[in-house]
View 1 (spheres, helix red, strand yellow):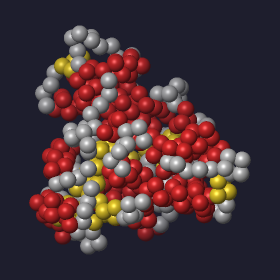
View 2: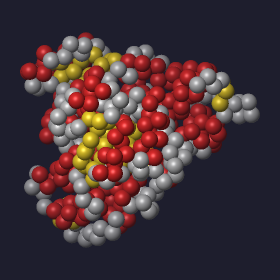
View 3: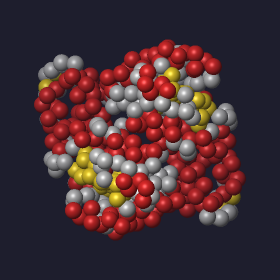
View 4: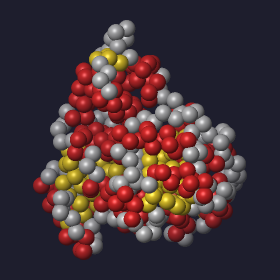
Amino acid sequence: MNKNTKCPLRKSLRRVLLYRGILLRLQALGVKKVYSYTLGSEAGISAEQVRKDFSVYKIKGNQRGGYLVDDLIYELELIFYRNGRQNIIVIGIGNIGSSLSNYNKFIQRQINIVASFDIDPSKQYLRSEIPVYGLERLGEVINRFDVRTAIIAVPDIAAQSVCDQLVLAGIEGIINFAPVILKVPDEVIVNNINLSDEIESVIYCVSHAKPC
Amino acid sequence: MNKNTKCPLRKSLRRVLLYRGILLRLQALGVKKVYSYTLGSEAGISAEQVRKDFSVYKIKGNQRGGYLVDDLIYELELIFYRNGRQNIIVIGIGNIGSSLSNYNKFIQRQINIVASFDIDPSKQYLRSEIPVYGLERLGEVINRFDVRTAIIAVPDIAAQSVCDQLVLAGIEGIINFAPVILKVPDEVIVNNINLSDEIESVIYCVSHAKPC
């Protein structure tokens, strides 16, 4: 069992990220003030839960007068950006890995992909913007760029071995796109994203209109 | 608020998908029999929860003797494959959209991407395996292939408009990669996947070793 399953903050954290997305959209639309019930209704969450989540992160609001959108965004950004830009790496330059490496939205969120890795030597020269290295340079790159978080996008059969190498090299957080449950030490955080599962669960619900 | 937030089955469904992944791995390793506590321990879930989830889907086990891996996989597959292959479409052939269109794991799971759509005419001739159409052909393709589920992978500014067109054309389930909350009728299911949020939440937990 990894920390993922016992982190009490993870759910509120996800909601806070959701609120921030909504607030950024409201800000773009020129909205100046927002109420917890507006935010809640946009997010499909109760106003009480919104206020509770904010209190977890010590964000004070004025329930009667609402929150100022700009201030609220600033406070939410502080939660995430307190540590400045985060250097991360991507392992596996297949479809998903290369798509993530090219995804230009990350940098706006202070997520900086500094390098990617692949065992296929032909891929090690394919890309220009983000360098692609062989796995033998993992430790060196992780140290040089002070990388603490890595994305695993290798085939399932290679995922555990890559994971072991990452942990050995000092990685503390993993976003895992391989459809396997990784074994990691207790102190390493794993976030599993299984795209097939995500799609399949929607297909299931669509096919079984009730009780979904 | 969409059905997503009030579907009681969604959480157990996700766990069942997780169990299936673990079972397929155990099967590949030659394991013949499995106990609910083994499955639970692999998934980071209690054995009681595993048995409860199986009972929701009417899967009977023999607590003392364990489950036969092959039989259990067969029963889990039945849950998802009861309706045969599902035709889906992808809207937006940017990084994520084209990566999903090329992802060869879906077909093993009976997920069949029949077409993709993009407003950029130059992309409409780029790909060979899966055709890329302009959005004006949405209704026609949805009808022809009996598509009920769609993936939205367009820029955030275009997402709601694409969503409206999909719903109008009869789509009942949406996997949304655009970082916006879509407004849909109550009967439409939306599963939001925000990759930046997924990465950022790991970065946050890594940076705040406690209490995450």
